[in-house]
Image (cartoon, rainbow, N blue to C red; front, side, top):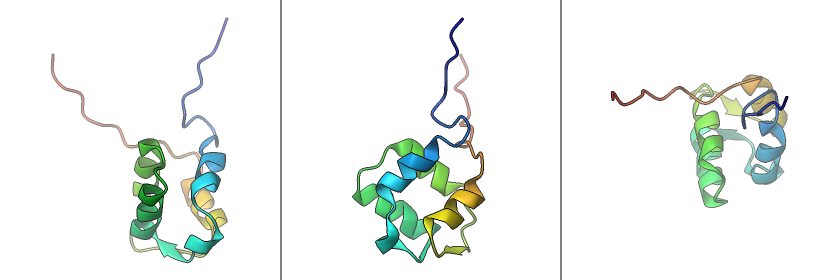
Length: 82
């Protein structure tokens, strides 16, 4: 029996975010983090993940971002009716 792991299962997104959000981009708000991800051509799933962070908060480090994300998952998109 095999199990399928989704990109947001557990804390797998941590290493992905570390790849794109380095120390020079902090302190930063949600919009600045998203802009950095876009500039570095990060996967869209990371943009969706960061979009779920509180907009008014400023983060001093990636550790703070990861703490707020916890086991976050991307928002559910509405399905098209068949």
